[in-house]
Length: 53
Image 1: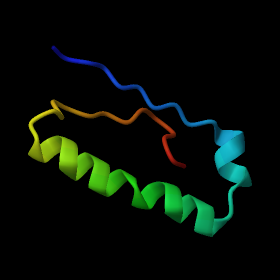
Image 2: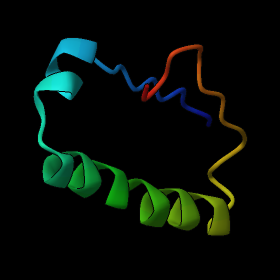
Image 3: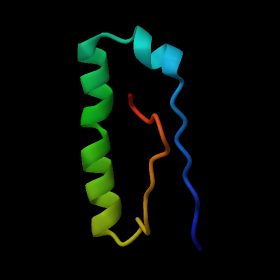
């Protein structure tokens, strides 16, 4: 079974975060992606235009 995970970024919320808060959000992505890739669960990824300005 495969699932599609869509992560939406609200630019207004992102812009309102402090640099520290943004770093905290981003620091969680690497370990998540590494775990999903290592387990074979990550089939692919793609970021749309304007993602994470």
